[in-house]
Length: 85
Length: 321
Image (cartoon, rainbow over all chains, first blue to last red; front, top):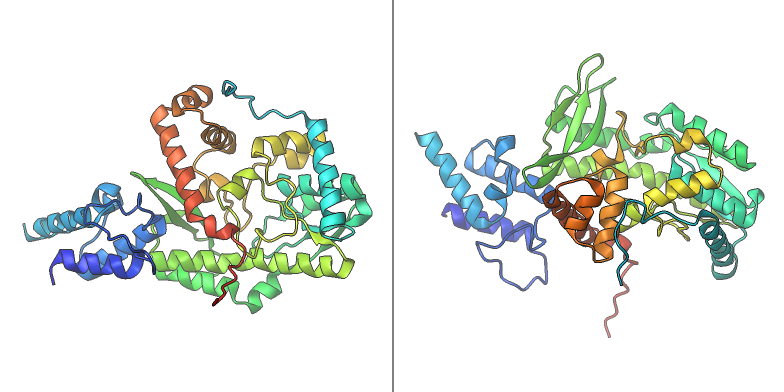
């Protein structure tokens, strides 16, 4: 499964509520759409750290890296590049 | 026309407000709820002190039962202040030590186990608290721990540990409420809740804990107004001058650290302005913060309201029809 598919599955299983019909687009803000609060962000961080074996520093815990599926994927790809380098 | 926003926009006519609140409290407790008086927890803080004074003025000191409910992590000041308050007003103070109930419910053990997921060496003699931290747009609550004789350490929690720490700490508020209802039932009284407008609006209470009550006399008063009215109604100076605290954790914790992002006088003005169609620019000028920060506070207020809406809901009665 691609990074995008894995992240999407995690978000859908953990933050999309029963009866929530509007489809979440990969570019949608997770905070602004009310799907992820500040505790949810901690769950996202734990998920990416455990699943993708990366460490998220305090300075990386920002909406630019975590506020949409697109951003999380971009962040993870960047982290993997850094590790590979 | 919207009145111009100013720093003293929340200033009250204290006597007029005291009269209206006490008349309404007497009516609601007696006529709507069919009770003779009120039971309430007095924490040594200003909100519960004001509610108690309103109850005394509305129904007389014999119809108010005040409970101090310390546990082993409470500040010793809290009980002393509760004594001073009730003695001054001629109200009976009942002291209920809730530590044995919390031990039986494993409140401390559950919380400490969750902290040990983050800090394995956390143990006997250590202190802890939660403290709001700003991280580039996210308001993440950190766990702060302190070993005996050492400096405090701030740790970013996992979602699971954080939720468990909060859930375990909520035993404290729910245990206190259980005892308030015990004494209310025993006396034929109602339970008076003590949230102010800021706490009530932003969901800064535990459902079934400090959020549970039959009547909430000050939930439409901004914190600034609580201070003004408390002073007017003779709440002891020692309480009026005490900085607000949650008194929930073993390390001193201000309410700003736990829940609010600004000191309460500034939060009050932001909340008022948002609800009365004042712009962030007007607020910025009045409270002396950058407009961008005020806009961020507006957004936090709106989000908190949405996130805590369920706390205000009565149980939903589901019908098959």
